[in-house]
Length: 327
Image (cartoon, rainbow, N blue to C red):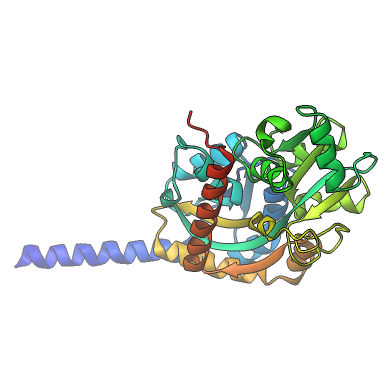
């Protein structure tokens, strides 16, 4: 009987200690991994959110770019981290829908992460350098058809949304084999991919509007289309509705925050509250919406359903285009 009482007391003490530890979380800075390079859509989103999010958390957030493998390197770093809430990921459409759909040997699945929320949706825009002779998508397609293998498009890496988008857009415009008709040039992050078009290394890019907004505003890049039915502020380009191509609307980006799959319920709940507070910040919303992003916080359940739905969409696209990477 005494042994049972001691065991019960010990269990209660451990429970109180665990509760106290959770209540005090975070006791030190939290590492926030950005799995893409500086200047890209993920980096812009993360760093714009950083200030209001740190205020909500009440503790420093250390923003770390861990680039490589189309977002997989940073994702694996978080997958393998302790599930204690001190290492989290700015997960992205490329790292958690396109990558899993394209890469048969990817070292993680969606089940290896616990999402605390998806907070941003943004469309894709295709663009060329401002001084390019290419004035429209019709001009671009004509160039591809006239000079197969000489037109190129840049991306943030093999298996990224940019990689899939470039090929898919060409396919929708009648290029039967976009994988050979145009050359894919992978770079280390969306910022580097946009710069490649700016300096003439690549002919065009299809990426999130947020990553192109400043280039378009400064008249450095010219948008040729946006993958939405409605116009995107700041982008004077035909929409999917204008082009009568509703299938283009499948190409959409998103950003969310996730931890390793074992992230405790209490920690996940705190992050849900902090994310709600941060995304309600007017300055943050104005800055992101000016880049064409839609700030719409989803619950963990809504976010997971959305992400899995997007995965199925991209899986079908990859099968159609024959883009699965087996090695």
